[in-house]
Image 1 (cartoon, helix red, strand yellow):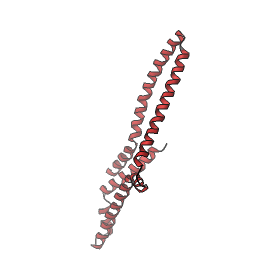
Image 2 (spheres, rainbow, N blue to C red):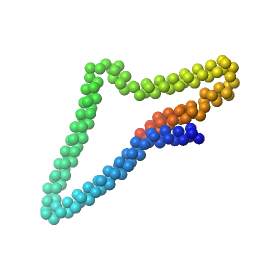
Image 3 (cartoon, one colour):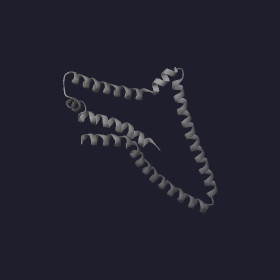
Image 4 (tube, rainbow, N blue to C red):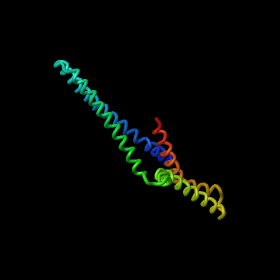
Length: 161
């Protein structure tokens, strides 16, 4: 039961950012709706005053400025990443990109080593196979294993668009 709860919790933890994005998006849409209502009221007022065309020109300018700002921000981020990597060897750049996968692989290999070494040690000591299996693949190990798998693969499923 704990394994099932742990697996479900880990899987849902991978989707937590998407859930938070959903609530943020809902809040953003509510805000945009309020802004649209205010804008519509201003448009009606501007139509009464004959300034609708001027307002459209200003909206276009505002949109252009927003697009330029977003493009400049993206360009700055790319430049920053390039600047960090300047002067570094390709080996260092690759190492920087491989930290999380290397830690994951290392912990997985450690887990496999402990389980395999424990298995052979127990068999060498004359312990029955079923007892060894029950000791090495107990509830806690299953919880850890299912949590890791659910987190990594659950996260991948939520990140696909």
